[in-house]
Image (cartoon, rainbow, N blue to C red; front, top):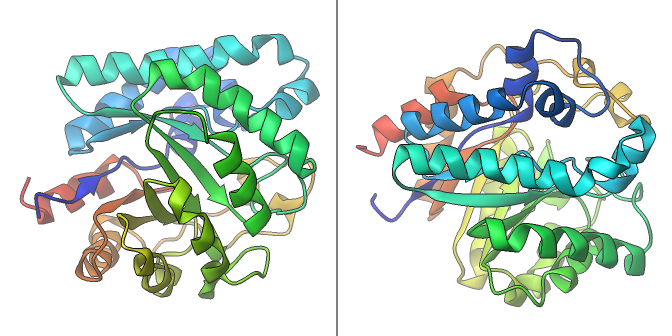
Length: 290
């Protein structure tokens, strides 16, 4: 299984847990502003567990979110800080890749919360240009609609870096995006991506999603979350992560069982999302014989 790339796990939930501070709408960005060393600690723990990629803590660094908190002037500096923490951890580890993470505009899991297409492309492109010199690949994460996928691919069309698209699907039916659109409808954007992934959805939803994503002949994979469900409270404006609850049945062994099933389906990129921590990644690495 040497051809399998092992990603890291969730960053945001790890940071919130380690900070011992109440969560805010800025989530992991706020933790990094106060305690940037924690970001490096999480990256180092994932590398030590066997991860081959450090996903930068840039998922939620969008202008609209910073505006609400009155810190838009920190936009560029926060991206650089997050990527430098990932790069330093990679250097200390002696290998691996750094991925720039780009989360959805507006809000996670709410497909119509972001701006129109033209504005979305411009905002995404600004981040692509900023991150490109500091990382090895870009991951557009938690894409919830066909429109978000279209904007991401267009925004990244001029970067020379590999671009991975990661889609969040319905927790009960992995064949459907959270927008209600068929996941198969995103396959038309595969030409603009180096890999297609399913992410931040229930582990049970990943197998049917992979059946679809594996049809285009490009690398594909999954990294699920460990939430019980995405609550209505979290779908409101400026939510905090205390509106979500971790599953008690998704320890390292149980999660790794799912991951090995995805690999049996042909997945070559696997890892974890929210509530999947270093212990989960270590168990996957063990089963991969690393």
